[in-house]
Image (cartoon, rainbow, N blue to C red; front, side, top):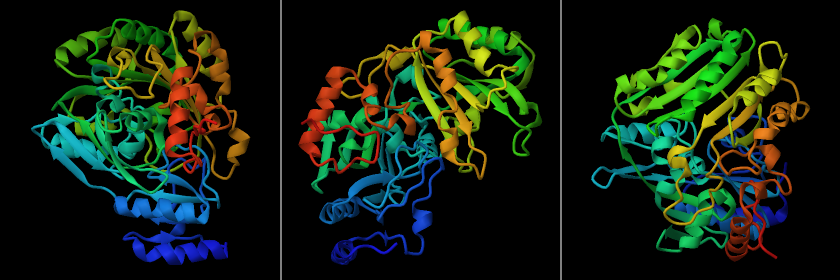
Length: 465
């Protein structure tokens, strides 16, 4: 594609003002710069800026405004929303990878491109742990802005966003703001849950927590024993202490060479992380281990920096369709309905159903106002279907919806900022992640900080009026 004359003039005007590279579709390296992890959404923006510092981000936003383009932010593409088209400038933050640990204050200041695994390793050097998710390749800023449900320490400490102390953010006017609970607190709170709707976050300072060992890992069971395992998991979560964070996954995989043989077909995995005495953890897990023969047991002592070993998420990019929901209750009838639709004899095409236990500190209110709600829900879940190579993603758009439809009696109305998919990015979809008062607040702030909706290639919050 050839850029239009106006864009060429703007590029000529701004190119020399940036430290990082600028790409257009005919530039070498453009495809690598817009590559993503979840290939269900691909990007073809008019311009990509490889930002190296906040000044680059500010100049990129001003460039976009001058050229009449929207602005989107890209780090890894684990959580896709909408494709960035030729009416968009993409800011790639991967070059902004600085981490500063203050061990005495138990805080970390990360730049916009820091990955979860890098932060976990840096914190571990000081005997500290961060509230990271399940995959080390996820960008820490995007994960935290959505809420951040840690699979290691989440029920003990709650949402990662509640422990953010300050942020640097470039707003739609190209200005860099330093925001916190005491300085521009409304913008600070709106970013936490409102995600990329209010600007490009360039840095984030957050709390860390003392932890050097976790009793963590996964238990695997045959799909034939799914009912007994799910019932034992239901009983475990009904009385689980906050020290125990867990999730259950139902897998349905064909015999692929990169998947262990015992996982061919249907299996059930329970992922666990316990902060405390290993003997106390094993006592909690004893009924689960006794529920059915265990195919594999990886639970043991690990450092917080080894959190990826708990769920062993895929590391290779692929197209996957996801549908998310919130479970208010997990009852015996819930188990029956779930296994009707994804059980061993169901013939389902869904590859993963993941049910994550919330509650505990996830239910705590934030210390300062933010946009992450639905704190009364007990579980979050998703159904994921991998799109076979060479087949159109569109033909799988509804794969997994049948799971949510079958579980409708137990679902909490609405959505959550941490659990949104491209299917939730359409008109009216993002609004489901907020209660009416919060949505009104966010739309008012959107009108104040981004009245032209420059930041719109996302789960978009439209400006009031």
